[in-house]
Image (cartoon, rainbow, N blue to C red; front, side, top):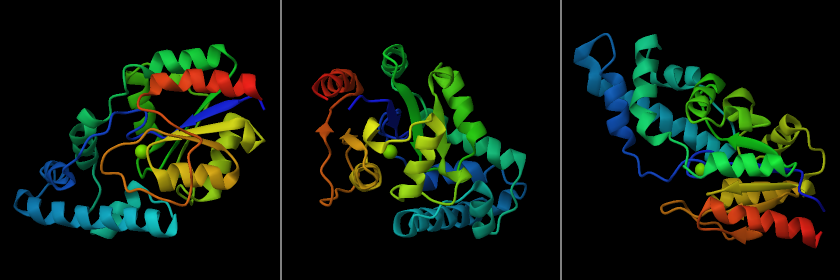
Length: 231
Ligand SMILES: [Mg+2]
């Protein structure tokens, strides 16, 4: 079967893997809080809230938004806090340098490019990052789970990105991600093919075998060509 779409996870897949000190990031966010005496308290509250939304994501496959994080933390959102959040994360958002060429070549071959990210960030933030790195126009459809009720590996998240790229048959989709459970198991469950780009510190999962494992995204294109030819 011809591959109609290649759909990518974002963090650790289109971006390099980074070990992130989330408490330190949130301390910098909290430093933008109006009350300078509450920095540590606000950072702890945001950290607890963030852990709770990721627990919901991992255990219940329920999505969240920034509004949920602030509500759980009991912290009033402000433009200053959000700007500090974006700024603190900035070093970890840069697209891998080989991605623009890969996406261009996929599209030149008639393959649609999709993105499906478990995220509570807004579409505007993700698109700002993709525009900065020159890949926004190379993406045919993207689903940010902050916009839908589910997260990967819930099948509805994968169906949402198929609708976004305009592909009806999951067998015509290849999903590329760094998480064996969310990405590989999720994609395989709906009938997609799945390619694992393994990263350190990502928990393993024995319940789903990837169709291929790659060390770098550049190894993806030959695989897609082979599977096209092989039918
Ligand atoms: Mg990832």
